[in-house]
Amino acid sequence: MKITLTGIDYVILIVYFAFVLGIGWALKKFMKSSSDFFLSGRAIPAWICGLAFISANLGAQEVIGMAASGAKYGIMTSHFYWIGAIPAMVFVGVFMMPFYYGSKARSVPEYLKLRFDEKTRAFNALTFAFMTVFSSGISMYALAKLFELLLGWNFHVSIAVSGVIVLVYIYLGGLTSAIYNEVLQFFLIVLGFLPLVLLGMKDVGGWQALMDKLSGVATSQGFAAGTWTHSWAHTGTAAANPMGVEWFGLAMGLGFVLSFGYWCTDFLVVQRAMAADSMSAARRTPLIAAVPKMLFPLLVILPGMIAIGLHASKGGFLPMGADGKPDFNMVIPAMLVKYFPPGMLGLGLTALMASFMSGMAGNVTAFNTVATYDIYQSYVKPGQTDSHYLRFGHVMTVVGILISVACAYAAAQFNNIMDMLQLVFGFVNAPLFATFLLGMFWKRSTGHGAFWGLIAGTLAAFLHWALTVPAGATHWIKGGCLGTVHTYPVEMAQNFWAAIFAWTICFAATIVISLVTARTKSDEELKGLVYSLTPKIVDHHEPWYKRPATLGIIILIAATALNLIFR
Amino acid sequence: MQLDIRYPIGLMFGSLGLIIAVYGALTNHLSLGININLWWGLVMLVFGGIMLLLARIGSAKQKADEKESQPTK
Image (tube, each protein chain N blue to C red):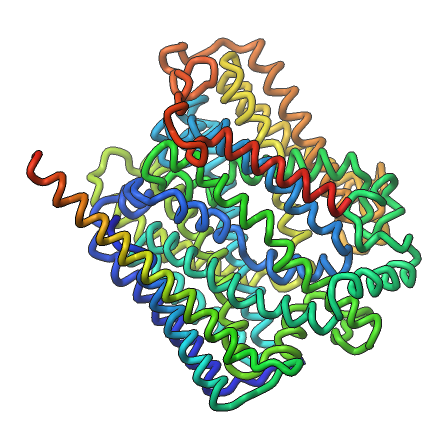
């Protein structure tokens, strides 16, 4: 498939680039201290942090990957949102933000140092730094590959241009620039893809016609008629739905372990809330973000459902992949070509580019902060002046981009971006939430317990991967390199269960080791870091929309309603 | 706040909306019978305008607050 851009499309792209760089330029004069650069001086209003929180996560895997999943699995893909994100976002805002923000930690690893000890922080800082530039590299690779395929743009040029633009606006304006651009990108993505969905719905003939077409898609693949149009009804057994997962693995693996592991501990998103101008704003950040997150399935999953529906009824809507099946990663590009004339086409492609860049920028800002505060200041050169660390942060921004570029070139051999991100996730992030949960809510947990618990959990994830395979796996990357104890129907089920094992082992190991090791931090030292030792936040005097608990309950009710409506 | 983000958002969507709407009016490309450039360009123009309006109201309010708080300093 080829997309031909005309002059007007380039004009739109250039206008966007001008604003992105202009925002960085306009913020340059405010970047006076390392706190301005890495934490936005803790001065950003809640709604901006909230939109940045969601936009930083809106990377490559979201727009292209979720549309592909929408075509592959139908409404079941919404699990990545309504149970795979919303409950965790409410939890981090209501229960965890008081400790992240209140402790004055400058990063998630630094919280671990305050709460536990140096080695726990070091482990988290190093693995996180690695993972985050790795993700950034994958975003970059996906962008360059897609644009090469669609527009015939040179792969190396795309890498260079996207890398330089992200570098310039972060280098100039730090986290504030990344956050502001994420907000801009959020609106661009919504306004760029919404007309695509509206035109797609018109083409397919409305909601009921889409449901009918999807029944045909389901039965033609040997599933019950409702499998593409129900989220829970066919999760009794793994074989009954196209995702190949059952309700327990889904709820525990995705809904609890993976989701809480990501939204509650990943510095990439937590950093956006830490930049907020008050405790109340920090706590409301993930809650404000939850509202668009809840509606995103309309924007990113529905296109996939429309595309597969039209492909099944008319044929030829999607291009064929090398395996003789429709190429689901081409859902969004195919719709752009079909529905957008020159002009809107430029807007759609700009939105696509924005989604890649926001993901990349989020990773780079999280990386430079951790690399500066948690690695350089802690272990390499402590006790320097603030301007020294600010300069080092600038250097780390360049280094982060360079490593991303290297990863982009290395990331060539994997086809499903999301599955691979989840593999890395499973090893490092899945056990993490157990550590934070025990750290924040059980004052008896110790540094040794946390550290060895994390190691045990990460090892458990690795061993699980090494001893199981998804059905039909042909490559060592899929697992089973130490033998095959269990075969999963699909890779996703393997990922969910890896996360469940890792979390459980970490949780148990942390408790056991904590109980046999002595506490190294007194109650006084843990004040503000652990639930039972921190004064409760009183917000009765605030209006309801400023009270995190009230907002959280409303959001959970709405998410439950969505699950029930589309069950 | 250092720089009100609503200004760049308003300016960008206002100008993109204007460019696309004018282009749509001149070229009349139809997509499923709709001149999507014209209509969506107008939607973005309105969105940009609202953002700019909110930013103006916000900065007027901030100025008023600053004036009020000055004598008490």
